[in-house]
Length: 432
Image (cartoon, rainbow, N blue to C red; front, side, top):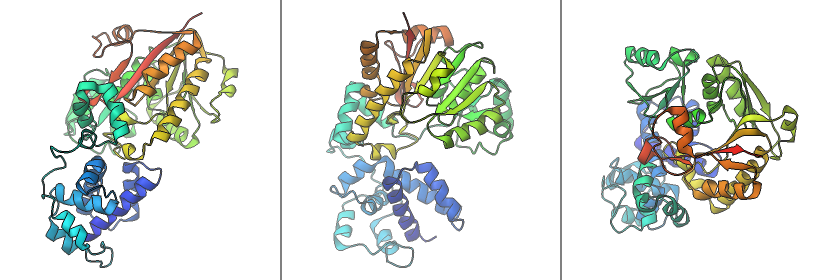
């Protein structure tokens, strides 16, 4: 592909990403399957430029004078990242087949103001722009992070490491570490998760025998920790209410030594189908999959009785996973934020009815926003009157046997402080 064609493909990819309901990694994988003619250098160029735009969207809009068209942002990113200079872009954008239309005189004038390789930050940028957020979302971040807001948001804009969870139904963490090392794949034990390994450099895991045999799964350390802090025991009846593709249930099954019972529920049959494949690969036999209606009443679950543990990994903004999904911050609106907080409130209320006396309701999000986290729990406790908070320090010490790396009654993990994705978790016990 010519450099101009690479630029044009990037613009079209980002346009499709923002206008549709896609994740960047899956969209790019689908794009590549349809364009086998694209070589490895083409793929690297297009993917890197796409993520440059996604990770610096609001900063780029500031540099372009508020012009947030994908074409303008992509051209500006090409210069500020050092991938091109103005002369390159004039030559690449010539309107020939597969290449962008020629630059206008105003585009050339605006691009000449940018310094090639000069980076995306400027000392005169507003705080929200420097942190790559719209003003309303920046104000929400300040509520949470206070004096550390810039450091926390900078960490959320980096590239996330790849964490693995060793399936201890089949292999110990030490054995997996040695096997990967023999293949030349360097890993380190995760700091907190007792079954986790972190890759020291990007690797394709899916083709490894360890993955195909179900000995390892890709799972962020923070997500692994949440599964452990459910305090599930071998004899228990556990409900994973918004199970998705089953990552936390897989971890729970290993913790429970494939005993007891785990029910995976989700409204999306496709996600549960992926979970089924993963469960078989992992050798898990104590799980039942159930597709539920989207009315959030869970009336079809009432016949199953109550559960010792109910894990509600609630649908949320995903703001804690922006390292992996930078596109999520672009598609998050205030309207969508309000819809999600209402959904979480309803899910909490109905999930609480499925918890046995003295059982636990574990509420988790991959969000750093207060309205999805502390405020949800505090409103629920006030309305319910049937639950109490178990201080997280007690849960952590009981399960993991180490000092709690956060403060307060809830767990808040962040890339800046803990090296994991951003997660919030509260553990609630049902009382008389």
